[in-house]
Image (tube, rainbow over all chains, first blue to last red; front, side, top):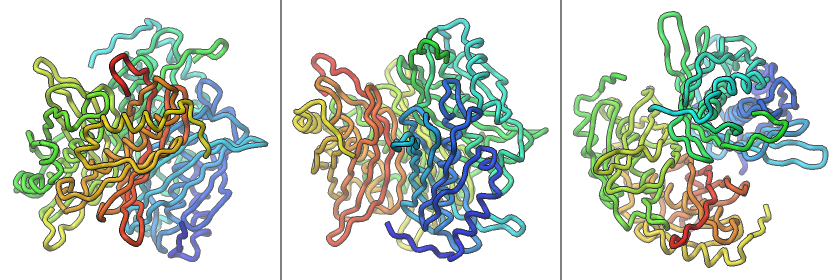
Length: 150
Length: 150
Length: 150
Length: 150
């Protein structure tokens, strides 16, 4: 799918907004791809993000997948818009084991008010990548309020 | 709904498992209720868990709601069982503002292999509580592997 | 939860719209409850609505639960509004066996543009009711277009 | 993704099971593709399957998408297995207008007990196809009971 951004500065806007998502910094997550309708976030494995079996907690994966979908949606929104998560659903298909994880959010349909995205979380091993979780998410376009950058 | 626990030590098992969920410690989350088929987790507001607008990140709320649903499911599982998240869906209904948040997971149907839970996230203000998010989740019963306590 | 309807004629509006949902007639579904923020639809068992094991097809249950959630949302919308389903998620907890089924949709949060509902599907036996499926749904308020009644 | 069927007669099994899904006959739905891990069902537009605005009812689309995902899952299950829908979530991205619709279910992950599928519903016009809905679904493998073919 080929997407045309409405805001030529979409990458700057996303990087600036991501930098203000304090939770991403807390998790140690970083942007690794920004294209129109497509954003990737990398999350290295950390022991303090695990669940009781030593795998990454589903909530940590959901957080980066949600942000990846949100920024994929934002990449196609007009200047002055901000993005809100309406809802998301995630299927956890494999144990989250591996040295690092990559969440990729892609826009399936960008409407004026609502955007639908699909997200994938990959466990990245040295020699292979495995899809361990998939997300389906709905995002909303809101107006950036004065003093509240997106 | 009245639920009968199969393992009389369900509370100890849940507290012990929660203590091993390193991500819950990282988030500053704490158990505040453990009943058969019903578990609550409290998450105080922290700036380092926020998204770009200063509200709590949806992923942080999803993490505690997922754990609350998972432990609600575990509370009804037999001795020697462990719990895995199969999938969850969350609707974010209001901005996550407030001094602290409470995620409450409740079992709707406990099957031999699969358990269905509903979760609610409340923003707790001094004078009122507001439901800001709802979750619907599927959990799976697995056998605790040797050396891998749940 | 107590809801105040914005349109005093909400019941008439819902009955009229339901009568135009040809699929509900095809399924043999009927409205059995209309309250502000709460709508119920009954679906009698029919062999031609079953899946391969002789239970009601999940899609038939999802259809009436979706309509129940949609009309629960519509009951709180202003005059001149119409309702669209944005997305829904359903968990099928028990085989859909029984002489008739009741889907109940309830509004959890009615926003200006988006409404979040929860739905339950009950199998109604002579002596008991069993919750066999639960739904979480997002609905959108749209403007009724000229010539297109809701 | 390349999938290897465990049951060489998977196509026969699916056709036979589909023929017993009375609801598919009621809807006028037909199988148009059966591959390992991939099943397609076509649904022609019919006035008696519409909602109040004259578009196909979301429940009718969900029904064929659910069946497509279920049979995609069944195509990879061993001989003697049957399939149950655990849950599904569908996003309705565009009005369901068009002469016919095609639901395509694909297996993302086939586990011993649980299978995760993604589904797409296309509106098929003479000159183009448009994706109007996407589904994410969880299916369960069960043992075919005596006298109850899948």
